Image (cartoon, rainbow, N blue to C red; front, side, top):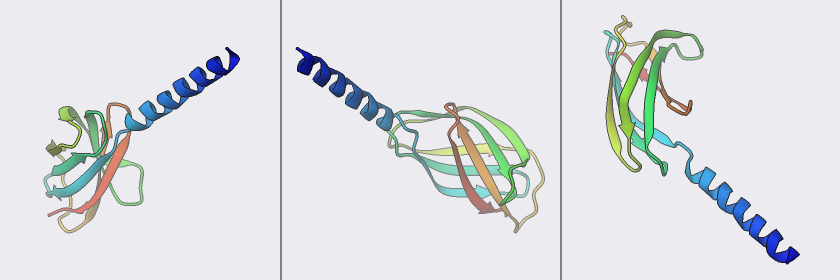
Length: 120
């Protein structure tokens, strides 16, 4: 009986760990376009096992943590597993064409993904 209880607990723990690993949010920003008027278009692929909802986005200068634009609200941006989604973001701030910026997106769970792109 003790062996059965130990084995049942071990299997439950292992199953729980596998479920947590498959519930990780894994996004890949495959392409990004940013214009000098502060509008961005990102092509984001969900490589994880669950749908991901984007809730915020920011623009930063590379190497800094202070946003220069944002947060921009992205409540309608949901990406299904395996899907490639075009995400359009209107930040509404002026950027310098030719300069590099970091566009950061944040999921409902608080996971952050970023890409560096030159403004055009």
